[in-house]
Image (cartoon, rainbow, N blue to C red; front, side, top):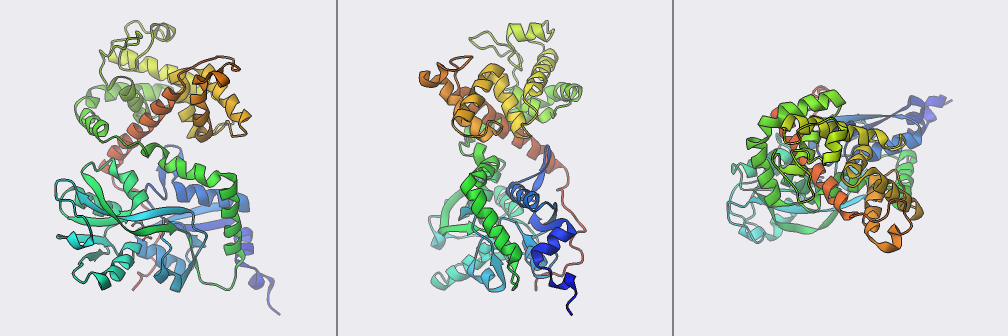
Length: 450
Ligand code: GLU
């Protein structure tokens, strides 16, 4: 007789074990340490699935793409969620879950060099990540473009290759549009020269197996989150603030980080410590308010690095708003109060974005926008939903029925999205000075894909 445990389906085994094991890559589009713990689209999706199954989630960050593929093949994980493109070659060895995000493959070059117009213009060093969808694509393209030459790099990941192009060490690389979008603001000399081929889809990667229990469950899960709008919300959480990328603004920001921030950083750090906040978030706020100019004055009478009104400064016990340390301390206290007023059922990071919106437009208006969000049958606990209601506060049809009335509701939107961008860059600058966070030993037992 077959013992009961042997007849269990893959899904039953996961539930019995109480753990879903997912293989991923450490990158901004997939999985990384966020300010409030693990983050990234793949993490968010996998966590949602694990919660639905009622099991714990274990994410394993592979060191490269070949380890992701090998790990799925060897059964080191239940599946891989790693921004993987659904390709014909991979389908021969694996199977893919439902497509969840469309991307294009892009040829990346450095603006200090001539822009290539097409594949036939490529004239220089060109590298792509080994075992990537890009390599697969180039192998196919080579048939029509015999002079196309590139190298498969089996040591570096796509972010490293982008850096090499930014440093002008390499002429071209090829990455997915979503990866490029998030990396571009850190590497200001990079541009996409052209898209290569038709849009592609990303999907989770499963081993080939006769057992469909987990695979079917995942298909149903994606159906559900697509219908509920959760999938769109999660994608927006990762990419939402990058759509209106501003090159000039970012260039100036980077210059100010080098020239102005060092003087004020100790004040941001001290204030963050006192109010249990992230100093980089306070610094991002300060930049949005005054570009770190302690003498900044606005026509409405707000002043100083954190642009406090006279009334707020008085409430926070600040005598001189133009003194950087006082302004920063006052701003931090005011923001901390704003954060504490946000209802408990709103989770991070939405909590922080809403507190920032409240800091900018006033708590009462934020509450009005949350009530409108509810009237529109959307979720007042999600920033993604509330930010769509905020601009309605400027329309009479809506504001005439609110408690606090008219507000320039589009302003907090821009305010919050700018701060998110500055904050991301500050975190990236700091992280890139430290070692990359990876899980070094998770894969030492796995053989490389030959
Ligand atoms: N989507 C790529 C792949 O499946 C990985 C991400 C990238 O290299 O841009 O190989």
